[in-house]
Every structure is written in C-alpha cells, then in structure tokens.
Amino acid sequence: MSTFKAPKGTYDLIPPYSAKYLAVRDAISGPLRLSGYGYVETPGFEDVDLFARGVGESTDIVTKEMYTLTTKGGANLALRPEGTASVLRAALEANLHKAGGLPVKLWYSGSYYRYERPQKGRYRHFSQVGAEAIGAEDPALDAELIILADQAYRTLGLRNFRILLNSLGDKECRPVYREALQAFLRGLDLDEETVRRAEINPLRVLDDKRAEVQKQLVGAPMLRDYLCDACKAYHEEVRALITAAGVAFEDDEKLVRGLDYYTRTTFEFVHDGLGSQSAVGGGGRYDGLSEMIGGPALPSVGWALGVDRTVLALEAEGVELDIPPATSVFAVALGEAKPVLFGLVTELRKAGVAADISYGGKGLKGAMKDANRSGARFAIVAGDRDLAEGVVQLKDMESGEQGPVAVADVVGVLRTKLA
Ligand code: AMP
Image 1 (cartoon, rainbow, N blue to C red):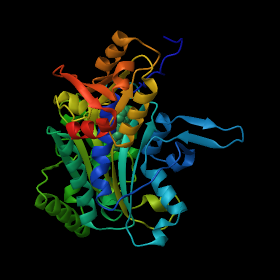
Image 2: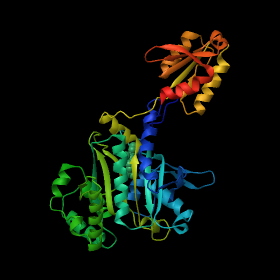
Image 3: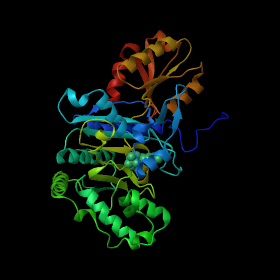
Image 4: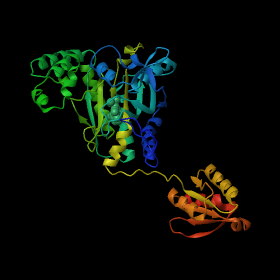
C-alpha cells in the first residue's frame, strides 16, 4: 500500500467491479443515442458564478457544497457540482440554439463534485449520465426523457424503482402559490432555520422529512390547486403521453427539486432498496435558466441519473449484469514460441476476440495460473515441438479437453467456437 489513500468521500473503481460502471453508462446513454441526443463534453470546472447565481436558498446550498478554487491568475472556479448549467453554457457558447432546429438535444457522462457529508450512496465525487433538451416547450419532450430513463433502467434489469412526478408551475402561477404557502407557514410553530427557509424557498419546507414538521403541514395549500390553466394542461399532456407509453409513475405533489431554476414538470427516480439516499436520478423543466445565465429565453428539460447509485440499486436487487469476460483466449508460450503466440494474440485482438498472453518469462505452471486467473474460455499453448509441427495446443478451459490446431487456422477456429 502507498502512504496515500483516496480522499474522504471518494472511492476508486477497480476491475472487474469497474465493468459494471461502464455497463451502466452504456445502458443509460444507449436509448439517448437512438433518440437524437448528441454527445457533449464540458470542462470539469467552470466559473463559480455559473453555479452560484444570484441569491436564494438553492444558491446557498450549491455554494456550501461546492469545491471552489482561485487560480494563479485570480479566476474563481468551481469543480462542477451538476451538469445542466455547464451543458447549457456550452450550447449557448457554441450557438447551437441558432445553428439548427430546436430543441438542441445533448447527452453527457462524467464526474461531479459536491462537498457533502459522505455516507453510503452519497459521495464527494460521483458520476452521472445526463440528458438535456434545450429550446422547446413541448410535453412530448418531457415525456420522451422520462420514457428513455425508464427504458435505460429496465434494460439494465432494474425493477424496484418508482417514478415520482409533479408540476412546479411557471412564473405566472408559482409566485401566487408561494405567497399562499408562506402565509400558511408563518402561522406554524417552526424552528428558526425552517422559518428562514420558509422565507427563501417555502416549497422545500413541504419536503421536510421530520414528523413534527409534517404533522403541522396537514392542510397546507397545495400547488396543484394553484396551477394556471396552461400549466395544468401541459402537465396533463405529459402524464397522458407517459401513460400511453406504458410507463408507470406516481403523482407526488410534494416533490420539489433542490435547485430553484426548475419549472413545470419535475420528476425523480427513486429506488426502495437504497435507504436514505434513495434517489437514483432526477430532473425536470428549467425554462428560466438560460436567461439567468445571460442567454435568450430557451425553455428546456433534462435529467441526470446517478451511476454510483444505479450500481447500488442493481446490487440491492441482486441483478447480475451480462458483462462479457475481459479475456476469452489466453496464450501460454513455452520455449521459443513467444513471438508466434504474441503474433496470434495480436491477430485475435484485431479480429475482435478478447485475448491476452502471459508476460514475464514464466514457466508452464505460472503461465497456466495466469490463464486460469484471466477467466479465459480457451488457452492456446505452444512450445518448440508444437511450432516445429506447425500447430498450437488449443485447450478448452471449461472441459479441460485439448488438441492441436494448425497455426494458420487458430484465429478462424477460435472465432467460430466463441461465436
Ligand atoms: P441531483 O442533481 O442532486 O438531482 O442528482 C441527480 C442524481 O445524481 C441523484 O439522483 C443521484 O443518483 C446522483 N447524486 C447526486 N449527488 C450525489 C452524491 N453526492 N453521491 C452520489 N450520487 C449522487
């Protein structure tokens, strides 16, 4: 062991376990790539003000959780805590919204950083795959994203997740509701911190998990009763489209998101096998964000799914992913056979067969141990005498059967056997 360890709240992805992460990223991005979403990659850090905009509780939260740094040149940067603001910034900077038709549909995959109190499922460095559809207000787009996330989870074999759905209203109806809720909250007996929250972001008080708070919230005005006709109609259409796609969801009128740029459609994917960190993904509509960061009005919708928690959810359900073996064929060279077998391994790899060879000048016993450890289905073994006869010994590692195959036929024979 070295004298260093991974920093608190982080962990390393080590093979073979790390293969699960690749499989999850592939499964989430697969449906997006089939649905017109283009891949976008943005820097791991941004101008701090991209994330910490203006005032308000969500800025407060974001600021507390952000890793910030000042460069030698004096720029204030932050490690990205989320993807949406960066992707929107990149789309605006590249003028994607002017280049072609709207919406601009983008997907991304990467690392995110939050200075949180670490616990199972909550890390300071974690990974997400996300999707954003920028510049269109259309219930079909909101529905599309929810359906694609559902499809991704189902492809992975996940079953015990639920989709929670709500509408947060828009800039017309939410302020009216906000005031009504605030008036109600002012009449309650709440602690100082919650009173403060009620003034800055009252909707989040509804989300308070404490029983003594929830008890007092009975009879609180609900946003559903304040939605304007346009928001109501929009939400009904989203619900109808998701239902028609056969995707089950639960209406959760208390669902609010941590960040205050969300409007209208809001959703979360929760998994019941994960304890307190049950959200595996979440998203919604953020019609005002573009203007908040200096862009034109671009109503947009998106989600981010957590890769770490998706892996935990798969484990909680006991789902074994269908991950191909890292090595299918392992070569064991004896005597002077190394160059020939090394050449065969190179050919196999070119032909798309996962192949490896023993390194370090080991004898038969050590090299066969490597072959066993690799999990390979077949071994090709050859020494000077085999090569003099123009063959290698092909060993089936499951049955133990072994027989000679002409060097020239090895690649073809193995491809057929592995097909
Ligand atoms: P959020 O932007 O907070 O809605 O995050 C979207 C998803 O990312 C969540 O549903 C989680 O799956 C994942 N996520 C967020 N924060 C963390 C964290 N600290 N550690 C692990 N996963 C996280």
